Amino acid sequence: MGNAEEVIEKEHIDFLFEGDSKSGKTEHWGVIAKDGAYIGEIKWYASWRKYVYYPEDGTLYDSNCMDTISEFIKGLMGKRR
Image (cartoon, rainbow, N blue to C red; front, side, top):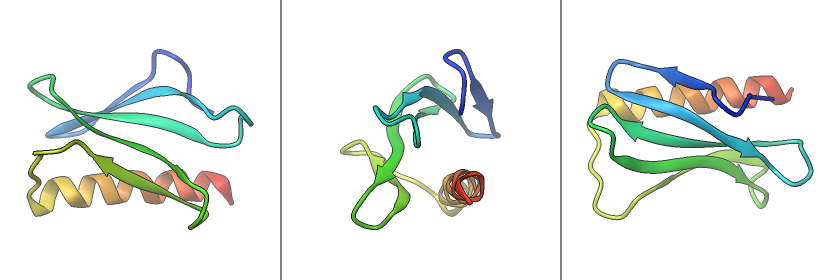
């Protein structure tokens, strides 16, 4: 799993490791815009058995940002297999 200080930097957004689930089987990541704004989080959604993105209200995304978030989620899913 990630470590408490881990930040993965991408072109327009960063992913900040926020901790493991209580079971220790899944991770929780904050999504931060380059201007420092917290724009959402990625965490496990048990009903779908997948990681999903939970955007903050009032946030906007272009296709590049959505692709970056999607690729990050795919990477997390790959670590689970």
